[in-house]
Length: 144
Image (tube, rainbow, N blue to C red; front, top):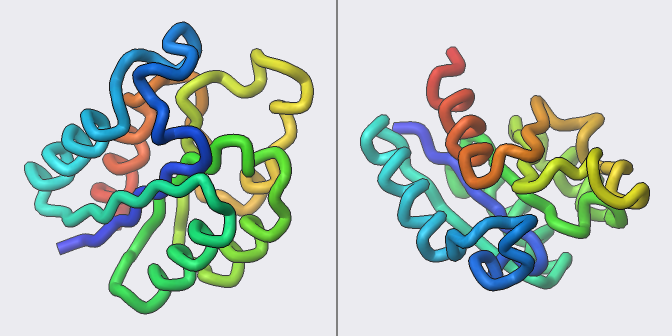
């Protein structure tokens, strides 16, 4: 059974109420439930984690290196554009990962166009809403 870690970064705890025109109306609890169901029907185990704290996210990444996680789907939120420390942790953990964004960061403010994470990711999915998480999971579940 494949084990995949889902990491939701800062402010994703406010999904459903924070700028629904940009991020949609699905809550984080609804998204996690849907992702667990999606993975279970495909014989995979998910661990979903959200934090507004950069250090907690980095600690969880290092835990993934030893807890049997085989891949990571991460929406780093605003840390995408600011955190060299997050990039260094993802590189050090050395698990395959896909960077996911609900909105199209390239069609938004200029500062959002830069990702410190993308260059080391296996892939990037942006602008497809919550469906982007499912697409990332599908990739890892069908990857040989």
